[in-house]
Length: 519
Image (cartoon, rainbow, N blue to C red; front, side):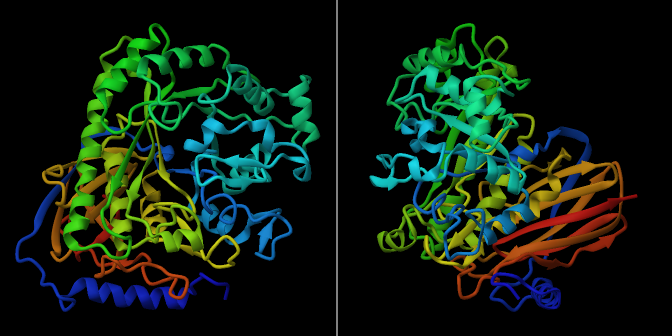
């Protein structure tokens, strides 16, 4: 059996064990005597759960790209044309709807021409954004597009506005999207890609209020107008241009940007909002975890308020709100970063709960969002995968990976309202979506010691069958490690069906998804 895989027999046995644990007390907590009552309102539709809500982010940072996704064709690590084989397998199985690259802060110093052509001839450049490491540019545009095609992701390219020029970004778009005949299209063909890449998502700068140039909103709005003027439809692709929006719930930046854009309207505006933590990743106290998880309520409020600002401008309702950097950012260990790469952050059950809170939020705010991307896909911050160093062969799926796996059935469904909606930051988190007679409900118990009994009614229909899966560990600091890669994985969750309604028990620190067939 390959490292990191699980046999069907072992999976079912583990599922049965967890089902028994979830069904009865004995793990330091007692089931509540009363149930929390929720109602799924099938007649109250919210909006489409876009697959892009489950987007990912890869930056030339630490061991995310180099040593994480890309090891090179000559590496001793099992690879396919230079891509880490096990990472490609896991990401393909999950399905990555959209992937953002090359940054992040790195984007605003990156010249795309450094990363094309024969790899041996590419220049070696200094990554001033992240530790002054030398980038040999062996992973460039063609390799990124190759990665996206292998894992089924739409590419999202973050363009250089900080140190670049409108001509540079316009040429990058031509290299990617013009079919044939131009010098840049022929250069792409010479580099091995005769067919155009047809890249739709383009970021016009990144964090222009900070590492992308320390601009005022007025200064950036002028830059955006200059760059966007030349980023026109090409090769049959109408580019989706994403402007650099606020850091968190910054109304001053959003209003200043929209005022400065005058008559122009971007396709989308990005917002970045991290859920910071004061403790080391595997050393969180219950109080520190509560403070971190409570931030998600503020993120949801920011989505509502930033959306309201956009909607207040003429044609502002046509501008998509893009949360293309989010996730928990803990107090990181220098020793671990030295070994595993900059911003390396081990994942725990707390991380999985955080991912569940975020993904539930996106379902509830489906009508206000266009695209989201968690930071970042491998080895950096709240990642899907971790490897045992840039030169290590082992690759482990994190609790965040499995949270995304549990939410995957929502993709492409219509989100519907669940009432009562979350009233307190650390209460039961819920969302639901529907496609025909199939209903998907996701629930998160973020409490450290308190289990929750949930009774779920469905207004407008009755359940004829139901099943559940849950991600759970009683230890907030437990996670999947290189020695124990399958400690925390989704397992069967008992669901009781009574007269068309559902009842279930959620242990503390649980992310659960229910599959319901409607009669």
